[in-house]
Image (cartoon, rainbow, N blue to C red; front, side, top):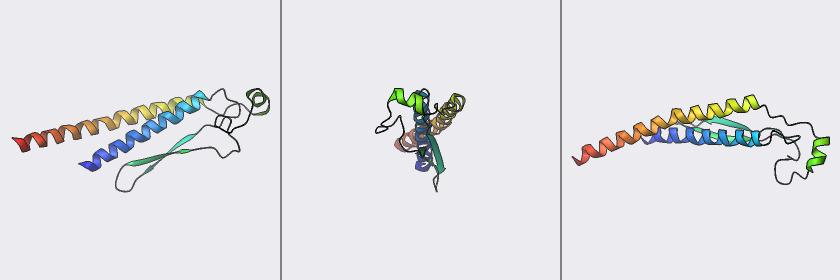
Length: 122
């Protein structure tokens, strides 16, 4: 029983990270030279999923602290943002659908646990 809750919660955490990364990318769509971050999701042995952020491998990132690029200079020197809004919308929809798929598992586990406790009391 605990394993299914763990699997569902790890899926929910991955969905939240995917949503956060996509929101970060959309917020920086106007930032010159911005390279979008990506969410990597891998299967965990025994069930569940692990998610991490894959950052681009370029020198200084204008949207990150320490990116020492003046905004006026960046607009002239750096290429436009590489954010694809259609791809970001797809990532946000995937995050929402993943969250919606994992919530019923937690609800079902909650109901089963409640029924089990009620039966043991009764």
